[in-house]
Image (tube, rainbow, N blue to C red; front, top):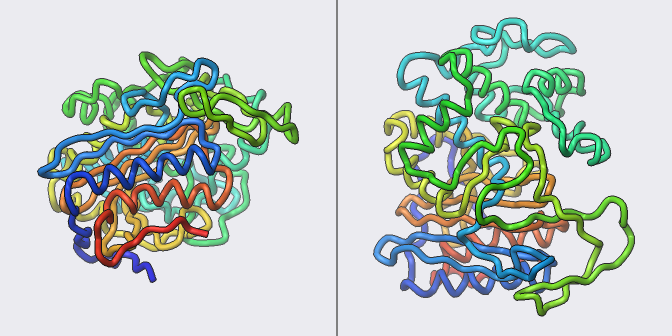
Length: 396
């Protein structure tokens, strides 16, 4: 049985690596499964292992039209991994004494959270970062609208927050909501006098040398080499399709796909707009857990977790301040975050207490529970490869 890390316990020790080739072989095979069995056009990973260095793996294609092979060097939209960047800046400001994590949101954003039973005087900054604010997720309301109505339009954070406050109250105390991250971004703006995008850039992206990580703003394309992303074509549902798969040779069967690469991601803002690469995502989490970005005492606060609702994450997951802790089948846990964008990119960044890191990129969001489990299983195989107590099998 999987055991989640205790809320206030020190980070558990991950299973030791069993040779430099074990993890790479396991990950490569798992990426192949995502492509051949679960209809993901392209999947890639970048990993670092102490004593083994950096390696990459990829399967499938980055572009169904041309058949260009998938590459771990391609940029992609990293979705909610953005939340860890935003949370890190908020924690930095707390470390500088410019705000308190237990400040009521009302102190920084007076009058913004009011009405329909929501009250910023009873919600703390910590509650925003930990998703215990009790606020609903505006993306659920947005996602029910036809894609063509909002795919290319600009959204302001306050507009989206106002939409959330009209929604029913969540039925559980822990409720994952991008609304929280937008509010955290506005708190950063209020405290610093600069946008959250500016603060993330000057405090994280530039110091760590994340050359492929940037905020796209209203630009709907992705600069430089990048993978395309795909989502079920809403205008051709029910029709079969076949297209080029791995290196243009394998045929992928299933619902027809639309190219979702071009998208205005201001709808995600401080909770989901960043563009990056697997290498930069790994560098970010190594910087965070290596003590470069926040003091050790503050990192310990970020790693203080509460149980997450498995309906909104997955079984065994716990949530800290912009961080997910997820159990490994060989013992211990990985730390990091996953991300999804409506256009089809799916990303994940993970790090273990002994310094191994892995970042994943998919060109299509898994559309079944089994496919999603296979995506998360790539992380488990990477960190548990060679463990005597672990023989990974795909979740049925």
